Every structure is written in C-alpha cells, then in structure tokens.
Length: 63
Image (cartoon, rainbow, N blue to C red; front, side, top):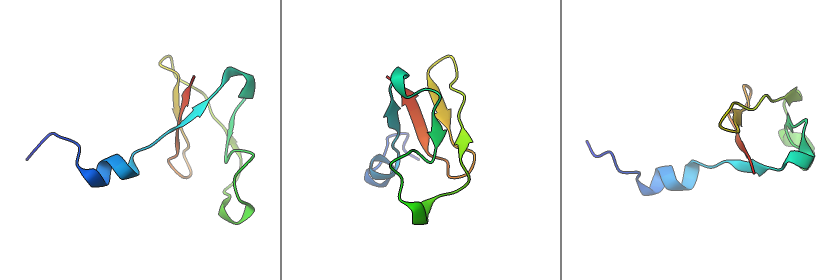
C-alpha cells in the first residue's frame, strides 16, 4: 500500500483559514447556506491553531 496522497484525497481533504479577527469562531460559518446548517458550535483551536467541527467534520486553521 502506498503512503502517497492520491487524487481523491487531494480533492477531498481541505480546511478553511480563520483569521484572528474572526474569533470567537463557530461552525457553520456566517457565510454558510441556511439549508446546509447544523446547530452552531463554537470551536476551540489547539496549540497548533487547528480545530474540527464535531457535527460536520469541517477543518479550520488559524492564519
């Protein structure tokens, strides 16, 4: 089994960049379409500046 990232993984692994001015940050973000919303949850970023939504799995990273 190869340890390289394949085309599918490259297309489907992503994160959104969050700026400090946007804190406190919540998912879904303000610009999310209403039909696609789950309950709002405020995210706590780890020491590496990363967070993931427990509802949808969206990944976020502080800039």
